[in-house]
Amino acid sequence: MRTHSSHTFPDRRSFLALTGGALLTLAGCAQETKTTISAAPARKLPSGAPPPGTKLAIALRTARLQLAASGIDKELRFTVSQWPNLSAGPDIIQGFRAHSIDVAGNAGIPPIQAKAIGVGARIVAVQVRNHPLYVFATAPGSSIARVEDFRGKKIAFSQGQAQGVVVLRALKKAGLRNSDVELVPLPSTQFLTALQSRQVDAAPLAEPTLTKYLSQYGKDGARGVRTDVVDLLSVLWSPTEVLDDPAKAAAVRDFVPLWARGQVWAWEHTDRWIDTYYVKDQGVTAADGKRIVDSLAAPRFPVSWDRAVAWEQETADLMAEGGFVPELDVADLFDRRFEGLAAGAVPAAYREE
Image (tube, one colour):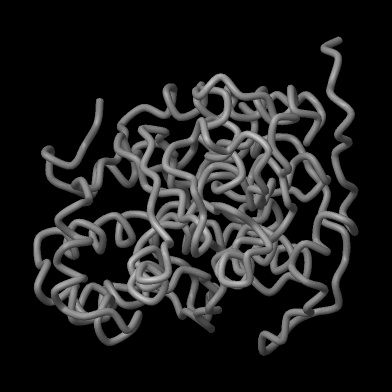
């Protein structure tokens, strides 16, 4: 058995407290109950259209906007009962436990954290990113210019989200131990406030949040510190109980290809996507939206999930080495009945073999 550091992994209550103690107020929330992990589904995916009346609650705002703007939403063969405006891993896990969310989009880290605290859920679609997504934003007036300067500094750290593992990978690559810095546990939704108030010296931010922050605080000495640390996976995942329900499983099966096509549409119609999302939804300028889009890479959907499974295991091992989760075998996090559905729905240029 590997020996862990002095960190201990949290139980359900302490981990979900990272959401700031807020309760979900989604319409139709059922009483929160424990969702347990069960064996991988033995039955095949249902064929044919979802039965009439099938509903899913999907927490993925970009997909909602992409499907509506492209007209792909007209191909939905089930009802989206609601589109909860939630994205942080702890919030999604709480929504799964409260039976309020059926499908969500996240990085690969929340499924690992969910398994660590006994919440049953599986990955049903995978997108890979081979380029860095996060940049470390510094507090106004900070002297930090590179990751090596993190020594002795306070770094925002959300262990249940992609940002947390980006921190761990960046420290490791810079030759720093976790104990060389002060990891400040915060949900990513509080990173901006922590930076502005100098509660932390640096925090990993993605676009368009990074641009909005630097536009406001760059004049006060805030800056972006770039690394080549890649957060490889973007996934769709669902609670086990949803995937064990034949009607809902059929709806999830239908949704995966539409989700992939929506992302390709956004990539191929950048002007409309910039206006729809970055300008009207996120409140950045069209020029900043174009700069952000130009910095991104085309979406890629793997035909095989073997690389994704290996990456997820490597990430789980890194978290376990830091004492943030117990040692985990993550292979059963992937519901491979859905493997290839996303890749098969997009042109060959967007597939990764």
